[in-house]
Image (cartoon, rainbow over all chains, first blue to last red; front, top):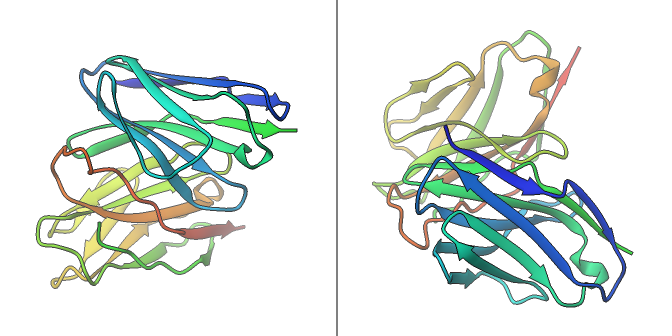
Length: 110
Length: 113
């Protein structure tokens, strides 16, 4: 069966520090991968999606970047975090009609 | 993606059926209706999806109107653990690059004892 791993579960980082969140998927090949962000009390906002290795599309301009070095690995990064980057970050994968989400990383920038 | 409209919140008594409505009046002929839910501080969980016919699984039933402009998610016997935000989403069936899930505000369902 397919599983999605996302870590860490929680993270507290100072303003200006770098960020790297990792997501890996098992049990499937060539999935579409997504990064979403959810600010406190808000809906889910799509940040990036990828249809293959090295292929990244961005939905909104922002302080973050994404990379897909391997078929089942998706990384969300920032060189310098801002206070506004705080939120709940979710990785997801989809294939055909189904989409599945990781358990999320709660990032607090202080 | 077609937009969806859901009430922002609903209450339901424990043990009773929870009926969550969704309007999707601009849905295209090949777009499916999906329902997800998000329990606090967790990732969204897939519940059910359908195209034209009503669907039922171990979690819920999905009733889609004949004109497909609206649907209702039914939790037949709501429990306290069903308290969550429920999202109704429409999307085409293909695996194209732009075929990502677009989440609206959802309905916050509160199941009360």
